[in-house]
Length: 206
Image (spheres, one colour):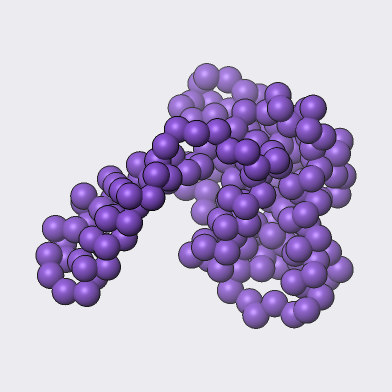
């Protein structure tokens, strides 16, 4: 099983299954992973690992799932059949959870307001390292646009909700020779399709 960066926990594989061990204060990652695996097992079987068992405790959580085999799509020039399979997997993932169930799923972390806060924090740290030149000018113009964009306004999205995996890294999309399967749902939750597609498109792994 291949996936993106798992810096906050340990991953081991044995006997056809994957065990992810999370620290005690994991920010809800284990709970989101387990919820996603269970939902997809019911509503989109075969798209993601099968949930085996979980121990969600304050001292440190463990999530056990089936092991998937496949080639991660990050870093490859995708063939037509792989692009079609990726599109099918993404559409299936977004539409898998029925709306009445999705309404009970918490919103995924890292959406618009969180990203804007991160950008402002990173800019304050990065700008002094490049006080002059084109990088600084580009950063200043971008921050100026962001401040005037009204994107930070606390308004509810009117887009139809979808189930979002929470990570646009193509390393989490595995090609098994005929279809694409998906792993890594630590930041999953209720989202909207435009945001999820943008995250794949704009992700550094793409």
